[in-house]
Image (cartoon, rainbow, N blue to C red; front, side, top):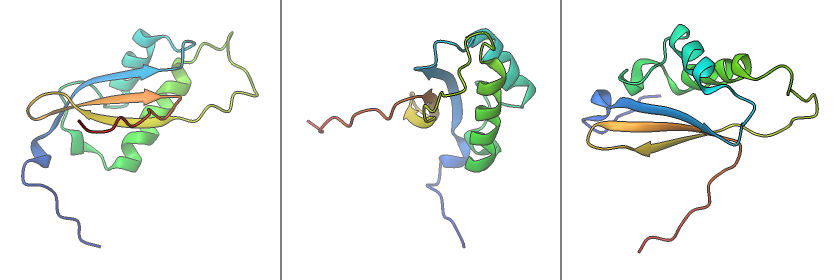
Length: 105
């Protein structure tokens, strides 16, 4: 399968990585673990394919999860949301809920 990207997509960089809906996750620890996995703001968005990127982020999220607050019955989904964040930049949001779509105005 051949994939063609918009001409500037290879230049996109990740400006920020945040999470929503996981209060048990220590954000500083999460960011530190992401760096160890090779993911940090300023890196090219296409450094890894999407599967690799989501696996690395999911692993880091699990490692940063407070073990004292972890529940075995926690079945919250993990959604990966990619938002424009300025010219040539995207923001990655890891969320426990799919955001509602707002109608275009």
